[in-house]
Length: 182
Image: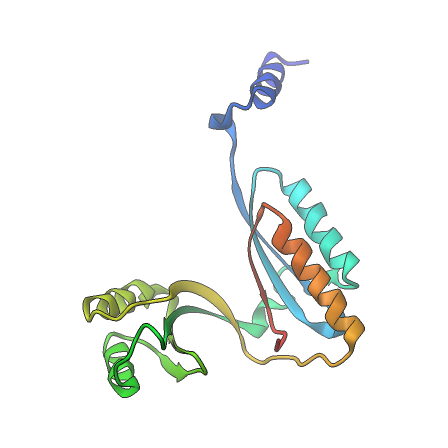
């Protein structure tokens, strides 16, 4: 056995994290009833992560697909959420501030405002809103579904929730995007 292989094994067992290389990987697949799911992970062991993600899909009666099989159904966008309880001013004023800063879309939800931007323009819009004294609940680049799927079958809902819970419990998984209309 080569000396460097032995040394690498000893360092790994000793917990020497200086040698660990993390990789960003994306998995795509379908949950029950054709729900599209994208999983972003950061891992030091792609085989372990792939097995864990595949297991989560299988346990929820879904299956892993090939790269690109569901990503075409999502748009990568910058998303800024502003809590209505934190921001008391006029919604039109907020919309104009966001659009002037380069936002693409503005919508008013039940308890928050949602601002969508180009992923590259997120920081610019975020800074403009912060400079205007607007408190942000969150600001991140995310995958927004182009259309949502409603589930009425209790078994399908239970299986999808099981898949999402298993993915959420995995330490390697950074984000999970889906088109289920919860």
